[in-house]
Image (tube, rainbow, N blue to C red; front, side):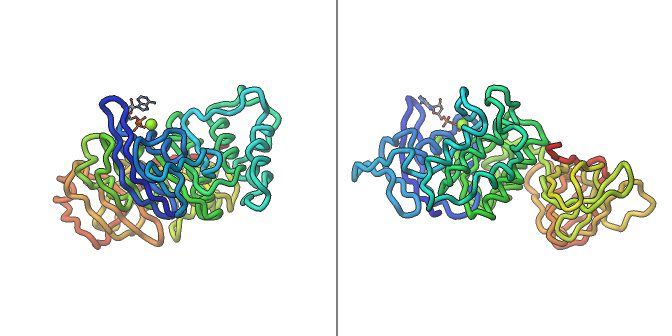
Length: 359
Ligand code: ADP
Ligand code: MG
């Protein structure tokens, strides 16, 4: 759904002043704390009124200071999930989901309640009261409740910020699935470059209320305007794969594109989707085929991008539909004489692969 935003909103010394056209798919909003990310989302959802400007959702004006238009949040058909999403505390999970579902006219419904419950694996907790849920369960319920209302647009404001690894992986996988399968556009706010690159089709970087740069999410790894507040050392590759099988009692194989990756033992059955993470700094790059080496994964890849500007240097590699980024020191890159389109070997220990499975 095309979205146009051209707004200003002042809070004391802070002023949001954004002009942006947001296209289809998943758009990331990235920026340091207090840069105005949540304010922007609140203006789009209708929870805050801009001081001035225009917002259109799918060519329909929902806010215009000039025309004095201000469509109420319920009528904007926008779903909203944030870090501490509010559920109805006195109701069960089931009743929370039914609330959104029953508010939506039949002809607008995209997914059945049953499908949503199945998608987010909520079957076991449907009758629980929502105050007894863990953080990960809450966020799954919050996402399910938003989806149950069949929104035209889903806003996600750091929905994974307080969650542990497996829950993050599960929700990332589901967001991707829903975005493609339901053709549901999303705006995703996060501090995490790893999540952005794994999920967002494009990204808008904002700072002090203003748009700094926008483009493909990979710009976050090589743009000087974000370099001073990104923790590059923690960058991880978040990848979605399909369980292929077990090799022995300690390791499994996962298919990502045409690549088979040996991972620690997975609990999911063959054919199930699993998200994994590999730290960029755990990947070793070799110019020649390594021999007699204990690491279980040796992937022949070609280098598609080298970010020369920062330390660490990120080497983006690709093979058979699988994209992996390795973090190297500048010294290593120059010692090895690495260049874009070189073929190299990535060495990854099975134990450097972290499964993000729910169970
Ligand atoms: P971010 O989500 O990027 O961390 P916010 O949009 O929450 O940033 O906040 C941007 C700035 O606006 C901050 O300085 C914040 O204190 C201020 N702000 C946000 N909401 C309000 C509000 N309702 N009243 C007063 N100031 C606010
Ligand atoms: Mg915020």
